[in-house]
Figure 1: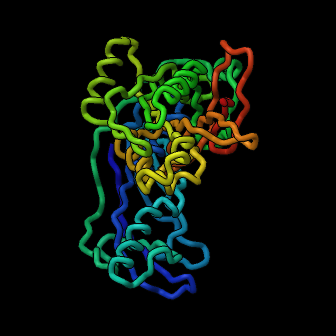
Figure 2: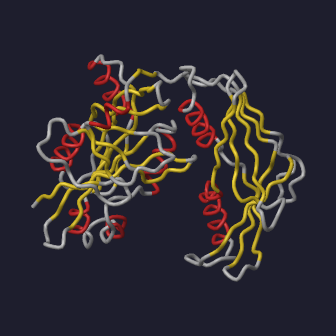
Figure 3: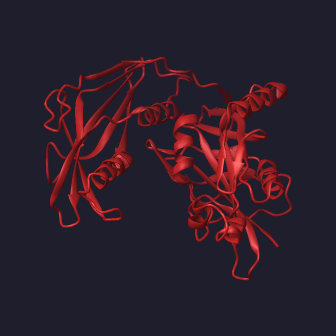
Length: 368
């Protein structure tokens, strides 16, 4: 599949009062946005295709008030080999992490104080015409091998009839159904790990409902990362951990797809240890556990870049009565950005269904 981008981009960094501090050229990584556009197109495809076989084109959408070259969003259009196209709107905060890096550079140069607020705007110019120092940037035109999704048929309605929605299910998100036993297993492993983070991968199948049409994820199992390196506030999937995970998946022999990962945030232990352990844990001690840290986002971007990949956070949350409850939150890709999201949890084997949490897609189980 061919990806085309005929523009060069730069950021204007502004003081809080609107004064210009600097312009910084950026070369965005469009891969997450392009993968999202592919998934959107495949979700709406009625031919049963598992790949598009066409092209993807990225173009800026000009700001209605400021006009060209100021950008308000991006359009990523995916077209199949049959010529039918689908366009996804990618928000301007897709470049937020690039703005953070540019701000850090200003701090390093002494032109901005650490912690100061700054604003940014995005500009786009035809390739070769950027005034921001990257005028030699060539037109981005890449031919890449598009992996085919392994899709099994399934009725989404039948899955939803035996499931309950957890958190806010955003209209843009493709449905994710997680078996209740997977959730229970992660809670047991969290308790067993005590004051150390733990985690693993989520397994299952991508299913297509041809009658809607829609693609959805069916998470049926988890495999713990038994050999991962962990501490109070960090989890690292080492090469040995991945070898062990893949061996366990092969031993299962179910032809499952890795649909994402899960890990824990042991907030109870963060708070108990805040005054005697590493500074990172002390900083985290006053936070809720249902968040994706910068390290979590970096791992997700690097290891789980597929648009269907999700990340579950299992965390402790304090209650008003002084006890603790376990909370499950889900994160995933939306328009090329990692966002909190909702999901559906099956409950065929339960007498009671856990109550939905807040918009992080969380629910909870009270413990002492």
